[in-house]
Length: 188
Ligand code: SF4
Ligand code: SF4
Image 1 (cartoon, rainbow, N blue to C red):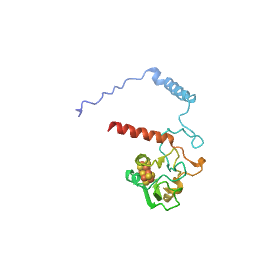
Image 2 (image 1 turned 135 degrees about the vertical axis):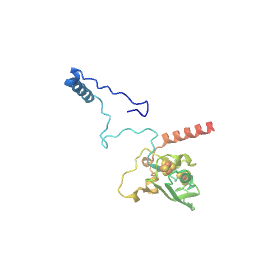
Image 3 (image 1 turned 30 degrees about the horizontal axis):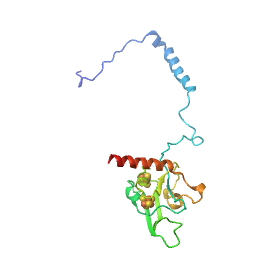
Image 4 (image 1 turned 90 degrees about the vertical axis):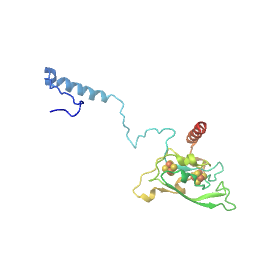
């Protein structure tokens, strides 16, 4: 039959040699390959007992930061929500009342702030958009759950604690974002 293209290969049914016919060298070769793997460091880890270290700039569960006095940094400007490609962030802004200066750093604050973790793609654009350094992604993992509603994380799960031991260290991400912004401004 005439081939349709010139890419066809001619297969030669070469007769097997004696060594190929007895299969023993091929079996020994296969077993040697298997044996070698016994002495190699396994590529897998026994999760969850063992965990691989994350990259220093891993993007996981968000944190809403407080300032050094414990006041919430977020001013409910909405820039993070606008920047979010997944439309995962919603918030309700409120005016700060007199006497609430210790709670909220700015005159406006987020009375409600929610992130839908099922929509979030952990791109980090919210933290890049934030002018107040109020939101950061951390190396914490969003816990699994069976109920969709439980993936809507409100301020109770997002805002860090006031006590020093409950603060979330974001210095590595902070530095990373600053470097990214500097690089972008140099290119522009
Ligand atoms: S990480 Fe990305 S997808 Fe997730 S909330 Fe922030 S901007 Fe939206
Ligand atoms: S987290 Fe930042 S960008 Fe988002 S509303 Fe608060 S201050 Fe604005």
